[in-house]
Length: 99
Length: 523
Image 1 (cartoon, each protein chain N blue to C red):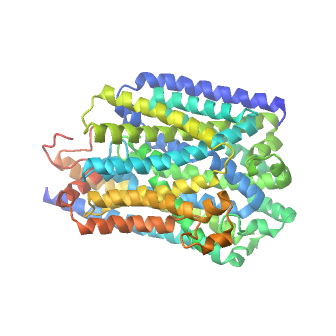
Image 2 (cartoon, each protein chain N blue to C red; image 1 turned 90 degrees about the horizontal axis):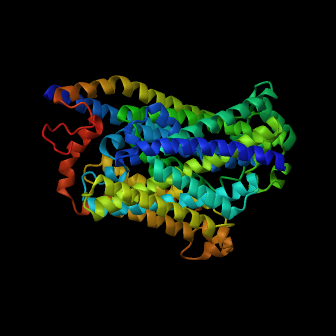
């Protein structure tokens, strides 16, 4: 019991840390984009190639970064996190709720 | 549009209605308990729920509205698209899993988990109903206006049809029918939009940049640059951004969908799928907007009425003739139906599960009574939706969507975050945070330029001189911060030891779905 309990505490702390880091990255990227829209329109108006402004590229990249951050979290959670929680659940005699 | 394209649209629409009513009939025979009615028996897979979440979230405003915004203004539509998407990773990282493991049917289950049930539930019902009613007004008025435009139907008739069909889904088929309506609608919307984007891009060598370049050639480089359509001031931009980002994580009809999956792993899976679908949809809509700008031209779009809303249907007509036009009109109608059904069901859950069963009856009610009350609540909300749609006819309700997200981010999101992550939250803290967020948002919107200038036509200079005026269109930056602050300060003033003691047990359950106590009759 103490072993799996402490493993559970460790993985809970790791999950919280990862969640906070990923949330912060998402916040910085999105508000970075919004603040550029509000304060530096000339920068976003730079054309990288005919038709493609920096603003359009960055907007699309904000959407892509949301996907990438989600994938990072889910790959970690589906693997390491779920295994640890499942192991603790089996020792305690509970594997999730029946409902 | 001509009569011939209209009957095709009506034909497609009737196919959709017949299919979804058949599903409702099938679902009604499977809806025997409250777990079926509110949560589809927890039997929806992560992939299916991802599509249903996308169906719940991709409203007519985000399809027709953003396509129109881009078609008329170019770049600015992208600001809404990114804001509406970035809330989803936040739900994934912070909310989806604990919500699924700690609650049963509503997000109030989680907020009230370690607190005094009655006051918290009542506050949560107020938070939920403020969001549901403002969003319903926006959707119903949008529905009436759009259907009038697309099908030439009378406004009132359109609102009554939407209300009645939606009520049929919810009343008889509960969450099972609502989920499948949303899955079908999401499939149709994504499929239709994707096909149109391919047709547009095929004219530009499958290179979006050539399309944008063509638009810039015709209408000037400004269509590729940030304009003044969405962002008027720096603080307004940040405040709107906060509302869009955190409001998503406080929408009751979105949060409720996480109970339809069997466990936290599937809840997590479903957010990732939803993020993929919704993100792709926004990127596609951006292409469609520019496609409409080049192939239909802004003059024609404006002349069609609806303030740009006709951009996507007109583009469909230009690309695939009356057949595609009819199909896209029917998809837009289906989109409205699915969103109002989800909203009504979440409102019904708050009224019956949180208010009637948990507050009035102290948690003691038979399954039959709970189902009956849930169905009565659905009818009441359906009738309310129709009446509100008629009352607000012809009024500018564009601000309602911003208001909805602002209330959701200020009333529901802070309380939910504090309940999940902060040991020392107390009953008084949670209640005051929710009430402060909801009432504060309504008050500041009323005292700000959205109502005073845009709606009441007061002079902005006069408004700025009034001592009571509030400078921002969207108050979220103030109200959300204050809702967090009020929740924390009130909790610290008078600690609640029972809540603190239950935190460790709750934390364990948030991870594993069980409390780890061997003899717990509640399990």
